[in-house]
Image 1: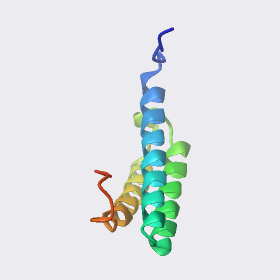
Image 2: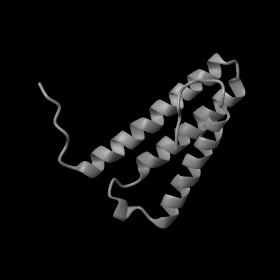
Image 3: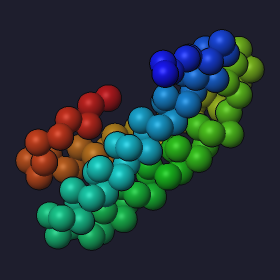
Image 4: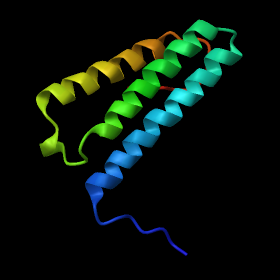
Length: 97
């Protein structure tokens, strides 16, 4: 059985981006927890869940996303990246931009 990509590629791309945010958030939360940094783990989880949830509320059609929504999403993702950067040296994982 082969996996078929959905015909709606915008929806598929949104799902991939959504899942990527979720995976990165939980891996980083796990790394911060394992390195005995509970406050950082909490901030990573909060930033990641906020970004993930907000992203889920936006239309899968980029033309329907307003400039204000795009700016807000960028802010939330940048906040997550800022928290992830604090894991430098703690893990070998690449949380990349």
